[in-house]
Amino acid sequence: MQGSTPKPHAVVIGSGFGGLAAAVRLGARGYRVTVLEKLDVPGGRAYVHRINGFTFDAGPTVITAPFLLEELWTLAGRRMSDDIDMRPVTPFYRIRFHDGAVFDYTGDAAAMRKEVERLAPGDVEGYERFIRTSEEIFKVGFEELAHVPFGSWWDMAKIVPDMMKLESYRSVYNLVAKHVKDDRLRQVMSFHPLLVGGNPFSTTSIYTLIAFLERKWGVHFPMGGTGALVKGLVRLIEGQGGEVRCNAEVKRILLAGRKARGVELASGETIAADVVVSNADSAWTYRHLVDENVRKRWTNERLEKQRYSMGLFVWYFGTKRKYENVAHHTICLGPRYEGLLDDIFQRHVLADDFSLYLHRPTATDPSLAPEGSDAFYVLSPVPNLSSGTNWEREAEPYRKRIERYLAETLMPGLEKEIVASRVTHPQEFQDRLLSFRGAAFGMEPVLTQSAFFRPHNESEDVERLYIVGAGTHPGAGLPGVLSSARVLDRVVPDAASLH
Ligand SMILES: Cc1cc2nc3c(=O)[nH]c(=O)nc-3n(C[C@H](O)[C@H](O)[C@H](O)COP(=O)(O)OP(=O)(O)OC[C@H]3O[C@@H](n4cnc5c(N)ncnc54)[C@H](O)[C@@H]3O)c2cc1C
Image 1 (cartoon, rainbow, N blue to C red):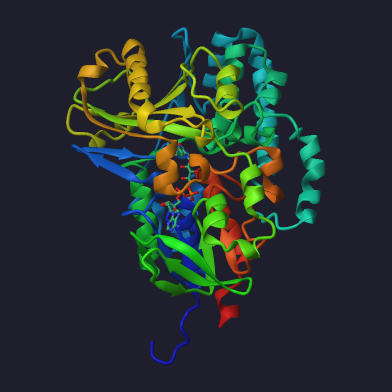
Image 2 (image 1 turned 180 degrees about the horizontal axis):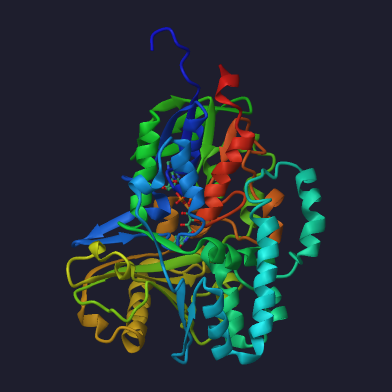
């Protein structure tokens, strides 16, 4: 409109769920928003691979706390149900133990009680105590703390009494083990940190809140796959007058003194901004995009010393037949639990054995594969690049081992059925997604790297720079990264104040 003051400009680096959510929120608060994405399409870890008629969502598949997404549609003046057909998935997970026994993990209290009774009759009471504990932790950890900025020591000091009361100094496994005795049930109740890149034996027990979060809101899957959510968010941004530019890698955050004033792209183009939000990996952002001279907190030395989450090996494959007996989400536990996790997180060695998560989205949405076929991905937690693994060499033998395992257990004849195939591994996480050490979930979610101790949502080192996504507070996973964008409402100035 002629004569009106132009809106302040917000540049968002990266189009993962955290970046897209931040863009919608800033758009709703009066900013003109430009999202700059290095890859050819938006989504980040939620990229979509299309191979031979199959649609493979690359990353998140277990959608929890859908109200966090709904909130974005509301902010943009729309209803999510007009764009997205979200379906509940049950069981949440079918867990298959090494001996072939299975446990159906659902959100139904009575069904869960029965499953626990079947697996470990002596642990029913302890299990129910654990769920009540998870609810108490959820009320503080998620409802009170997930969307607040931890910008100062005082913010941290205020929550210490609650953390002591909730025994946050214990690990997830340790808290579970306090309540249930059966070794298999302990695994069932403690694997959740792996969904956000943490080792159940060292991740703070705050993360046991996930058990209650899943029960409260369920596990969902959008028809068309997670890619449908990404598309929907991009449309919201465009509807607000914002722009998502792909093939636009940011090389540097431009500064005026200690204040962000824009970005420079790999092409040499510069873009001015009133605020810059980085959804790129937080360690990578500081290490490679912010001049070392202004970094007092996130020095190269500190970044090197941080602990980084595990890596992931993922094999996306399509079969020319259906495997109807395979549930939407299956977790295949291997012969070792603590030992394997030690190999991944402590010793950083690629073990011969593995535990897997197998995804069959066509169980809910057959349109993701050609008629009569199934789309899958199978994911194996592996050490990040600290292991020194040469993935160019190891990827194919590792894939073969997984293929053999699946053929011998859940998917007879698998080798002969494959008609689409692609793998990804920590080296690709580093080279393609610019993830520090190829970690799949940013910094590891241990207590000493959580809340105030994680890179802040409002940068400690650069004014008008904000961080969203897995590597900042509260952490990885869709509820985490969507909450990190929520924090921006508290720390980014109102657009009106920048005129
Ligand atoms: C295989 C896999 C399965 C998962 N499953 C689940 C699940 O079931 N449920 C769940 O809740 N979570 C899951 N997660 C975790 C969840 O996907 C992530 O925590 C979340 O998607 C990360 O979002 P983000 O906002 O941090 O951004 P990311 O998805 O990491 O995106 C960051 C974007 O920034 C771009 N970028 C980086 N540097 C630059 C630059 N310099 N210039 C321009 N662009 C740049 C990258 O290309 C990328 O697109 C999974 C993760 C993986 C990898």
